[in-house]
Image (tube, rainbow, N blue to C red; front, side, top):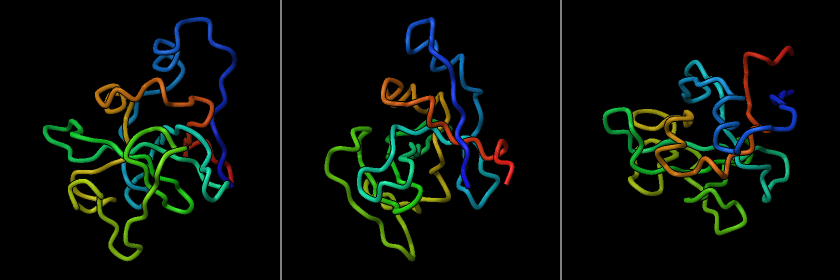
Length: 138
């Protein structure tokens, strides 16, 4: 069972609290030394997964675009608003819908805080839903 990192009320501006309450970690695909996943909310499609940000099209370790992906049903959004239109990648060979690169390897990863800042999506992240596998006791 997943456990999420919960924080108390913030006493500073959201962008400052966003960075100060979370540890900056490199984020990769779950099959290769996974780490923190920053989520924008619970999935409105399957109602069971978390919608986390992927940094895609990495050039010099900086994302050219981002995606939001549900960790259960794998619905994909091209922006952090998960109430909008969603799509699905091919289940056998999932690819980024923007540049057709492999979704879970190569120049794509679960977004770091720096990636999220570069994408301009910091305000969409819900720090209470941050997934940290190392805190999973089960």
